[in-house]
Length: 187
Image (tube, rainbow, N blue to C red; front, side, top):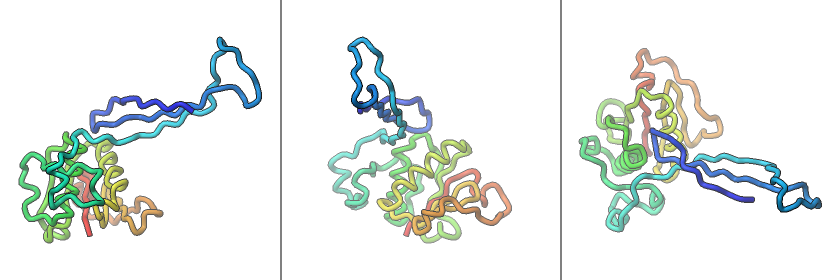
């Protein structure tokens, strides 16, 4: 089994594809040195690679916990969104803004879950990017202490992860139905 890491062209995040190739003839047969290898299987796996590393001073930060040590908690360019957020929501903001630096707009304090500083909105009209962010959040749900992720009128929760995305009732608008942003709330 040979594994290769190939960079992929992904404008929405730093990604790499890990390609595992199992080459050779059937077991028990001989091949000459000049015979081409037979590829038995190819497995493609997307691997998220953050763009910025965590410095030692960031690792000592109060926002860095043992569970989030693999995520970048480097403070993001000041957009004011962290004001009033609970520490867990700040960690989500920093993890997302470091992994997806092309996101320019976030929503913080507001009504509902946003009033207590436990929710953040990640604004994007790029559907593929929205799903990429949602998948990133789902993959790090335990580390970030997520309560839920909502995108495109569907909700995902760690406690019901086995059910996948569940359809939500129509709330009446593009924004209320989360078609223009990924909503994430923390415990």
